Length: 138
Image (cartoon, rainbow, N blue to C red; front, side, top):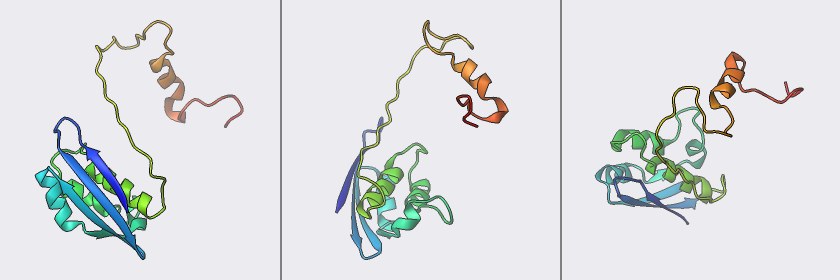
């Protein structure tokens, strides 16, 4: 059994996902303080792990139901469900995922702190040809 504890952020609502592989199907149990995630839990009781790990075809059912039930598009619960299912099915290593946000005063366009590589210069180098690569890498 693989367990994911998801702390969604500023809403402060906690969700716990338990995934258990039985044959080729993964049974999912979700407990949440969030009303939307509780509705998601009512619909999502088992999934096909191979469907959950890919955006091709129908895409992950967990993300489809998160879109349907979670009010905030940046809610990490759908992705947390997918991560638990992948780990339980042996399709991914059980590693934590972290997003850290910070805010700063914006610099004027083109300005960079002293000593920092030029972000806007890097964008100009990428241009329409894609990211700038080391010489001989193309």
